[in-house]
Length: 215
Image 1 (spheres, rainbow, N blue to C red):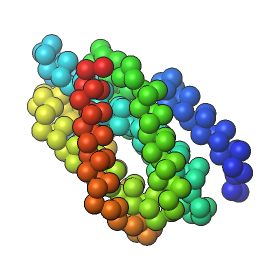
Image 2: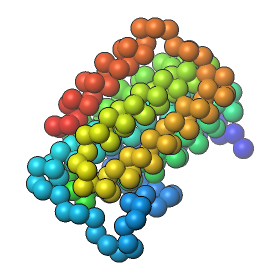
Image 3: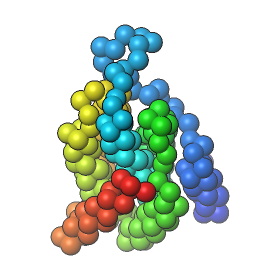
Image 4: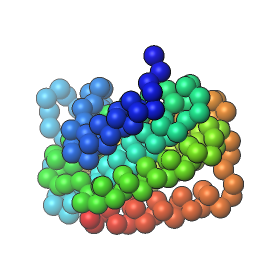
C-alpha cells in the first residue's frame, strides 16, 4: 500500500534520526575477507596506517549518510510510485553500507564526522531539488551520484593499507552495490544530466572528502 505524503515525511524523519544517531542495523552481515579462517583476526595495523584507514572510512561513512538523505528526499518527491519504491529500496540497501562503515570505524578506534548533520541537510536539499525536476532527472542524478561514488571507492582501494583486508573487503562489496544501483536507475529511464551538473557534483564531493578526512 502506497503511503500518504505525511506518512512518507514521518518515515523520512525516523530514518534521519537513526542515521545521525548511529542507530542503524545492517540486514546483511559485514563482508569478511576471503581466505581468512573463521574467528581469525586480520593483521594488526601500525598506528599511522590505522589513522589513515579510519579517515578513509569516515569519508565513506559521510557518503552513506548523504546517500540516506538523497534517497529519502527523492522518494518523498518522486512522481510515480515505482520511482519512490526504487528510491526506498536503494536506501534500504545503503543502510547496510552505513552500518558496516560505523562498525569498522569503531574497530579502528575512531569516530564518524562531527559534521554529519550538515552533510545530511545539504544532501537532503539536493535530493529534494532533483526530485522536483521530475523522475527521469531524479534517476539521472542517482546514476551520476553512484558512478562518482563507485569511482571514489576505487580510489580508496588504492589508498587503503594493503594489510587492512577488512576495510578493503567492505569497500569492494559497497562498490558492487553502487554499480548495481546506477544500472537499475538507468534501466528505469534515467535522463543524462547537463554538462555542468556532474562537474559541480564532483567539486562538492571533493570538498566533502577533504573536510571529512579530518573532521
